[in-house]
Length: 126
Image (cartoon, rainbow, N blue to C red; front, side):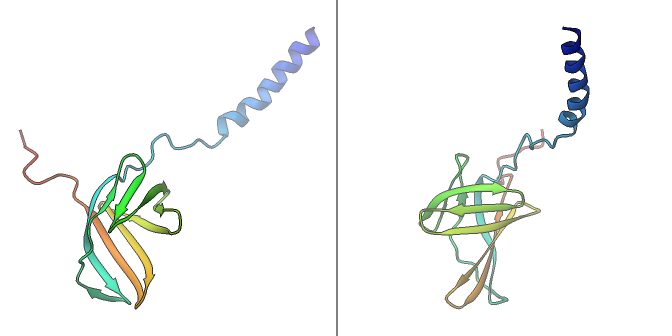
């Protein structure tokens, strides 16, 4: 019985540092949900007028963009959007911006969507 107790203590002493140094998952992920307005667009490296409809990212993990609906997942600095047939990745940038790059009919398209955190007229300083 004594041998069993000693072995248990020795195992605990060796396993404790391993458990303590194990990487931990992030407790909170980045909340990107909201309505994003198109603030800039480029086609083949040249600035064009941004006429895209807003990108809507819902709290439940669903998105909507110009009739395209599906689910999204935040992984690191990327928002991965997908439906049954199409997948796309958009980069999360500082200042509540999401940059979506894809190849269209006329070349590389880069669209920058920006979220306004505080609605004008809905905040007060008091």
